Image 1 (cartoon, rainbow, N blue to C red):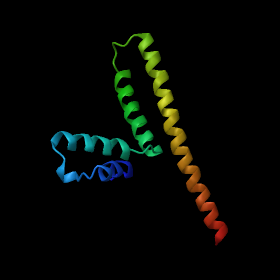
Image 2 (cartoon, rainbow, N blue to C red; image 1 turned 120 degrees about the vertical axis):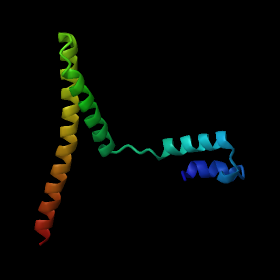
Image 3 (cartoon, rainbow, N blue to C red; image 1 turned 180 degrees about the horizontal axis):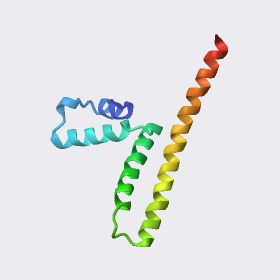
Length: 104
């Protein structure tokens, strides 16, 4: 449980079991919002999903030249972000291997 939510419940002497359906839904929503942490992996997953969506649209033969241009530009941005994230991971792995070799 999020510490802030726990503090509100404790301050008001409320137990989760005592919440009605509407209050429980609010509690669940707040918990979900506060538990979502931004990570590079989540960003990468989002970018990969967007890339797939754009690639699907890009194969539509009825697209105008302007739409194809926008799709191509957007696709290149998502691919660059994915590349940066994956590059950082590869660089980190290489650095860790190098440090382990120095320790031996």
